[in-house]
Length: 634
Image (cartoon, rainbow, N blue to C red; front, side, top):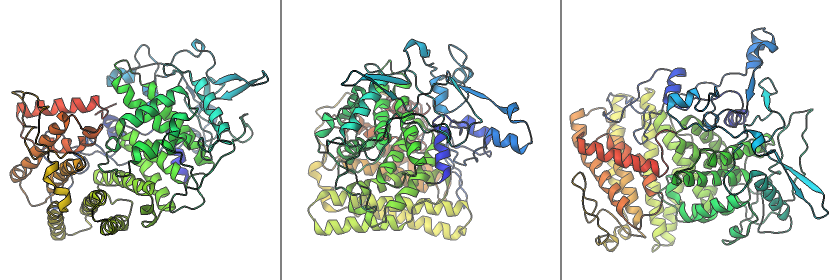
């Protein structure tokens, strides 16, 4: 892993420098650009230029990333100034919101200036003296002696110099703890779990140092417990032999000696989280519900990222939820991941999963600049440990590819540049699924996977075409030809479904759960033929995605008038709205589905007729989505 990503993570965990996260901040440091508002259609030209804003997301996304500024120390040296003149102190008493956004807090109470201007929730940590020393915990051993466990984010100093060596991780500890379990107890139990891993095959932490170990500078080594013995098993992820991960049995998670807060959030994850929370329409291996939590127990950065993601959703459901309830796990994950990267322990599937999980959290928080940093790091790892062929040989490899490819394609579409991953990865994926279909002609899962992979390949070709057009790397006539070709490919995809995927007996026609229609409703969510029941529910999801992709693609047509465009795309937009409300009211809807469909609804909203009823309906749906975990702004 290059120095770029370690420096990037340092900014996320509280070191000097930060990247802007809000549109207002980005406009101050980036090249001026035109963001497309939700209320107007895109403009057209032979080379489409409106994808600086991707309609599938609620905020303008300007993705030109400025170079990170050099440290104050280096800048002072280059100017010949005295280092003492530019020494600054960074305190630990700023509000949690400014910490999460990596901006300077003026510490005005009760509401700091940045939170007041941005109308954000402003929460300050409690004074350190109110809870005693959270930096370390003392537990009694069998002989009565005491042993200390140092928190990875603890420090004996109240402040740090920004002129320290750049290689030292400077973290901002979260002083507030979740209800029910102080962090010192939490970290002690984690240490006990690591010691237990030496003797129990079901309690393994994969080659991770003590969570209490803190990266230290040369010449200033901090005392930390010794590394635990690691038990490795026989499961080797495809594509990188020698990196082994022990997979526990399905019920082993409940028996792990994890802290109570970890157990609570992992239980919530298993019972409530699905692949739809990750924006992925297909998970035939049940990776997110079963395999990911099991693997996470073996890697502390991944465990903290996963627990933090679950805590985020729990916080949203709690009227009294606080920002720090989930940020402490997120910050700890970043800190531990950075520690791994400094030890060069980077190219393995556990680190890849940690990065992808952190990228998902960034997407929920609307921080697209940070998401791009994770995406580039994930690309380096996935292409190192896998090939297009070996990625398809295991369920975890296939999901890593699908998970990464989603971020890769979204970032490419927003930024109007080519995807990082080559096309061969997608064609190999399709070939694999088609071979499985030939070998197992009666299994639905392979037909569902193949259908999704073919649509993903079309999306890849779309992003490539838009990138070439924006850079004037293709003649206008050739652009029109390729655009029309992709339009035909989209229509062909819709008509090429396997007959088993069109079984009418799974269409929902019984609406005993029907609610009375509201006079302000703009759609009839109970129209027969909209929703499919399980196991073909994916039909409804992927059709909603298809309509939104058609909207996005045709909006890039260079030879169509705005009037014709609205006429052509209005029907697609209306169908998306019908499907969304049908899913919303369906009692058997898998959790997280509406969150996954948010991009589809957002882009459809661009081409829905602008009438008072339609506008109010959209506002209500977006408000609903914000309560379910997809905020338009943090």
